[in-house]
Amino acid sequence: MHEGTSFKRCIACIGAGYVGGPTMAMIAARCPQYKVTVVDINASRIEAWNSDALPIYEPGLLDVVKVARGRNLFFSTEVEAAIREAGVIFVSVNTPTKTFGEGAGKAADLQHWERTARMIVREAASDKIIVEKSTLPVRTAAAMSRILNANDKGIHFEVVSNPEFLAEGTAVADIDRPDRVLVGAQETPQGIAARDTIVEIYANWVPAEKILTSNVWSAELSKLAANAFLAQRISSINSITALCEKTSANIMEVSRAIGMDSRIGPRFLSPSVGFGGSCFKKDLLNLVYICQSYGLSEAASYWESVVAMNDHQRRRFVSTMVGAMFNTVAGKRIALFGFAFKADTGDTRESPAIGVARQLIEERAQVVITDPQALDNAKIDLADHLQAIELTDDPYAAAQGAHAIALCTEWQLYRDLDYRRIFERMEKPAFIFDGRNILDHEALYKIGFNVFPVGKGALKHF
Ligand SMILES: NC(=O)c1ccc[n+]([C@@H]2O[C@H](COP(=O)([O-])OP(=O)(O)OC[C@H]3O[C@@H](n4cnc5c(N)ncnc54)[C@H](O)[C@@H]3O)[C@@H](O)[C@H]2O)c1
Image 1 (tube, rainbow, N blue to C red):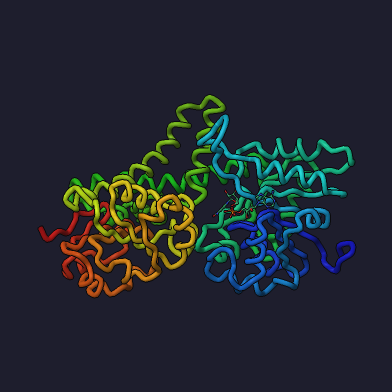
Image 2 (cartoon, protein in one colour):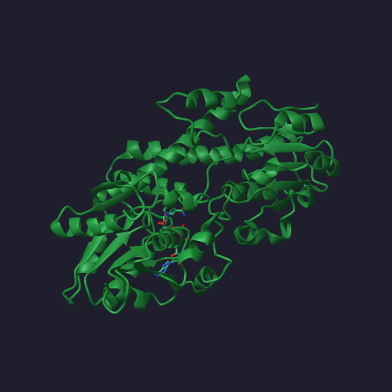
């Protein structure tokens, strides 16, 4: 039993965001023998974690939190106390793209990480395992280890990499039944002992064959590479959409035919307005920056093109809209269906809808945004344009008097709307631009819409 408590182990997590909150909730729910304390400097976020209105929307998460909260799961702003108590400290603070100085626009901004490391050194009074949960540039553990172990207290810190592979919107299932858990450590006796400790935590619910161990650099790099590969699949399929539109090939048929090749597989081959989210672009750019730092310019430009294709696809979506609507959208009401970067999350970080909205505002359109979860974030993302936009959670109200609908997020609810009712309320000719190809295009066309899918010929009444 851990000293001073009835728990077998005390675990802390610094950073109560999209990763720290769900992962620690699952550990606590699955392992009542551990005390898990999640801390953050953001007091309102912690307050929300302690309520029924969690700070992030994630299907099924509240149930998991409720299993353990107050029993062995605690959310707190007392970072120092949690550091002192825990033997294992997960760090899942944000690691955004650097916006200033050397590497601005590409490199990872590690200031939150480094600040956390220095606070750990200051507060710790015993040896600790520090777990990199955030996504970090390869070889960060070396720098962290140096900062942490440059202490005169005689305390040893072992840095382990345990990157998180969850996807927002399916986080609970992803953590409960992961494809794999990866734990990387230095190949020293202390490193391997620390790795075993982390493996033991996951082994409480993850089958042994799904827990991979590796050296610490492979673990750090695997996370960046996995995100780069996922983003690359989206850019690859999107790179074929314009050609489909020119040649009467149908991207849905092409995607299906490609995906049934067992060497390729069907997932992540949906054409769209482009990928978003806080990770893909930042991790790709981070990979590009690391390659450049090692003088690997071909590898850098290869991965940079995945980002360029994504930006192009979003701009092309808006250009198609403007072109189709007689080369002007000035003064026209356009309803954006969905603002979150994907369905089942309220997260709008790097959402393609932000770029779509901004480009339409530049074209002087009247933009109306509707989304079931993301309107608060939309307000922040477009804070400099609040006079030019309208926000509503009712898609029917958004479409009232609109010239066009631009579907940006694949929420199930947008598949199930009464489009006949919507059509009747719209200006004519009425347009739908389906940025996710989730609607029944033939049925919409029969109602009277001019329908513009991605990577499929448009269905027009003129
Ligand atoms: N969001 C995802 O889907 C996802 C998936 C896998 C990995 N990741 C990675 O996980 C990391 C965290 O991502 P996120 O989406 O949870 O970010 P987030 O912004 O939602 O959460 C980070 C939290 O850390 C807190 N924080 C920052 N500095 C702190 C400090 N010094 N002390 C205490 N708290 C501090 C912030 O207040 C914030 O609440 C990133 O490196 C990201 O790349 C994210």
